[in-house]
Length: 328
Image (cartoon, rainbow, N blue to C red; front, side):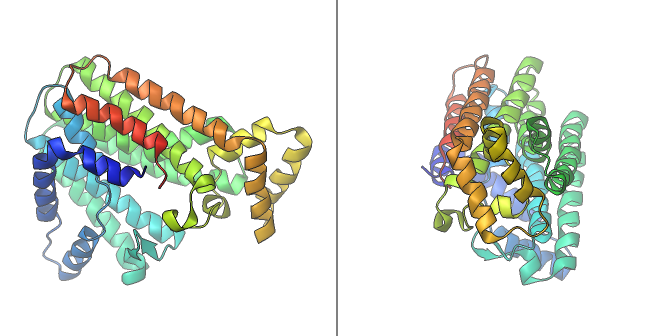
């Protein structure tokens, strides 16, 4: 089941809040500079799954508390997410994003850098205006972690660092930090009880880890046409992901040396990459990574136990299942 379809269908009960979110996001993307306006309008057509703002709304609703400023907090998080995607496409020299030309391809690298900076700055201004120092702190720290995670990911690739501790430190920063902050700021803005705020923050962190591992698994199991990129694409980008790390741990010493040689080689051939993909399959790397994703999913579910029964809580529970079962 594809997460975008299924998650989208789940959000019916908060459609009013999502519509309000879209309207506020639209207002926040307006700018006096014509080019900023053009790029922002274009980006609005690349709508993603809106996972983060949906989590902000759902986590606030699940506490039984509410404040309309939760919506603007969700807008801030989504703008930061959009900024990181623009910068990601630029770093990866990607020409497309969700089937359309990326900002760097449609304009150029300079515009992409500056537009990412603009979105980041405007998001922080919006959060400052909300006047909740703790929510601002949560998002600012997540943004700091995110940047460090992206740099660390690059370092891991350069050094062919296949330690699981490095991987989890990187993924916690790169992916889980902003998902966790999205889950934290809703309850903070709604002035929910402290134990609920902390439980939902941890829920977001575990969900984010499960989400990234599921993503890594798809790189090996997904269908290239569904994913829009070849199988083993992350590998070719020198990204060391959990299925590979698990396969290296499970393989006998002799088999490992050959793979490490490919990972550290300056110009691996296409057949080298095929060999690595086969190695991961042979040594059960995918199944082991999937098992880890399910462990984090179970921890995320555990975090929801102390919340009152509600539609929002059950959507949060289903979201965890969708994340680990997704196929695109």
